[in-house]
Length: 414
Image (cartoon, rainbow, N blue to C red):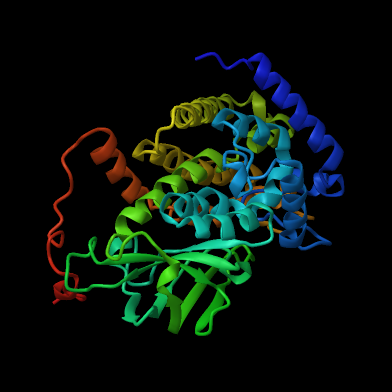
């Protein structure tokens, strides 16, 4: 594969670079460049409001949700052009964090299964930053088994009445809408009785409770539903076909997370280049150089694996199970790198105050956030199963509940 820009791509890159230079909120550039995964915040501004303003600016210039059709707020650009834009947007891409779920997961699902009214009503407002979306999948009793969900939706004329709970919902506390998967028929096997809806997060009966994280942030939430009414017109896909609808979301989720998830390697390399340990410069230590070389290879592998996914998308292919590889590798790599950086710090590694800790406390924030990265979007174990079964073609796990009606599956051990 030739990674050099074609003349057309070079022209597109020049346009993108000029737009960023002219319109990006440069007053936040220094803070954003130091922000790490796990602590992307601004000291004197609300990152959600700043993100909305940047998203609106991009939309007005034709740079938001690039691969979406123009009719839905996008640019109709190619996947390669989207990669070029992300490269040129640089640190300002961190401001789009509140919109990543909407753009990368909810939007593609609405495009695949929504009506034309859904697409024209919701997608342009999502692309412009006017509305933020979340994804309501995980539940306390389901663990990594999305199909084990218990939030129920019961038909009532032209509406559905929803009761239940979701958990670990990123951004629910500032979201306007979400895609919600529910159980509409408990008498069939668990993968067959599900239905997906578009939910107005301001609906009566929706309660959002933020979860305080170890790193001091509150990005995840519990969401409770008490007799929430959703019109049938807000359904995505057929009744009982929610699992197939959710696969579109999940495949796009793993593509989005795997392609954008930071590993901490650039930060670690820069840190080691300047760090002086008790034994001298860190880079003089062959063990340090060996670790860096190991992670450099992995980082390069992630980069070119993501390019392979982009190439497939450019040919019109649907994101596949192979995109689980990027998320699996990046999640564990992030945790290993953060732990190693703190080990290099010695006793100073226990400091977490950005004003006192080495590298502004970025590695401490990474370490505290890294367990979530190995759970969100599919746990390591789930991703390994997906890769083994759907990519490598290995025999699947024995699933004793596969063909059992959901309401007959035991809920506790004996």
